[in-house]
Length: 381
Image 1 (cartoon, rainbow, N blue to C red):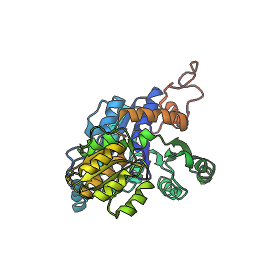
Image 2: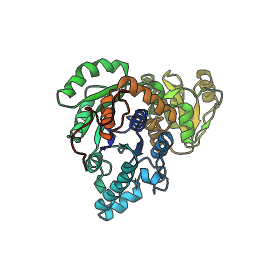
Image 3: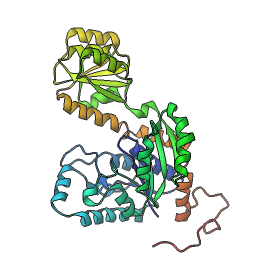
Image 4: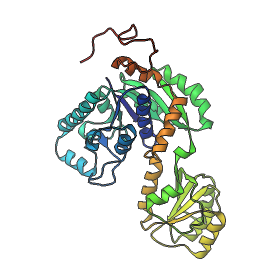
């Protein structure tokens, strides 16, 4: 059967949680389901010695009996990219992906395939997301966000790259304030252009960001005021690199934010502590703040985190942690299963696999295999 390919308009859309949740929903219909990620892009090691954690989470949650290397055949590391640029490896790499996919497809009713962080990732070896969809002849679900009408441009551009293989678009983490315009204006607009909308999943705070505790753990940071609560959610960040007056105005316009600045910028730290939307302060360079700053932080109940890395490195890491969110958390996937069940129309998509596979999953009790509901056309080779 054709796989379901879950891709996205960009990073941080919740694609991983959605891909595994779709696989879980298919399992609930009685199908045996595997997960496949042709190219690993979330790597902790620049030379690819450590694979990303998405296949590991999928393997555990779906009970897949396969090696991680079989679920993620290409480690798309900087070293791999440099090697690919020096030599033409398109055919070899594409063949490797196809062989690993076929091995899974022979063992499972359905394979859910996850794309890379961006549509164009993998172009060096002919494995962009559109390339993968073509190679595997996959039915594609495009995951996108929506904050304003301009976001429709990205959705249209992505959908058109999967022409003939597009199962539909799924909007994720949509704020309540944006729901009406998306539902009443954008959805009809897309559908008149033959782009089905599978659902609109609302924004849920515990999935939209990370807790201060999670951020501190990911950064390897020291909590300088342990009495402060680290349960607050961080969804964005600000960099304190301006004057104190401008910084205060900027910080007051933010909410659920972390503020990153050098440990010697006491005036910026003080301004951040006056802004109600700052959930924590991340101090860089291993420089501890003054006692006065820690006293104000205690009064405001704002955690102060200290890291040894410089501001630029820390900002990159904070951005990565926030954009990744909690997609590697089993509870997040289970929550996404519930959200998709309530807010997305995936029944038609998954029912096609019931029929194609000859499975009676989801059928009426009195309906037998080979009844009038089954296709009379020859099976595809």
